[in-house]
Image (cartoon, rainbow, N blue to C red):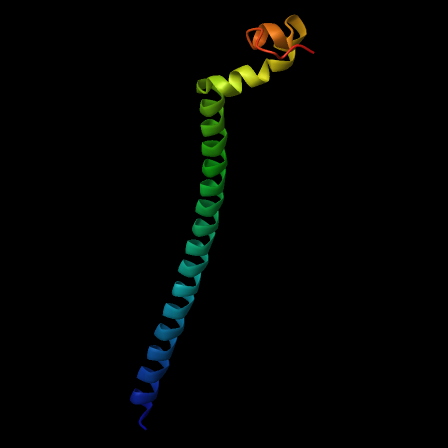
Length: 89
């Protein structure tokens, strides 16, 4: 092998190593971005669940009345609630 061929091989090897390092840096950057995006997705999913639950609780009359059932029962008895149909206690 001539010295010119050896120099080209060395340069090609250096270029190759530089490319490998470049791809390693890019891979690390992409992995970091992926991690950040996964965290963002988790936060958004949690917010979405919270928002859906809030909407369900605000728009579902059964849930609204069930929240106030204990206060409702304090002010009325079961016979009034059931329309006096054999539910006297």
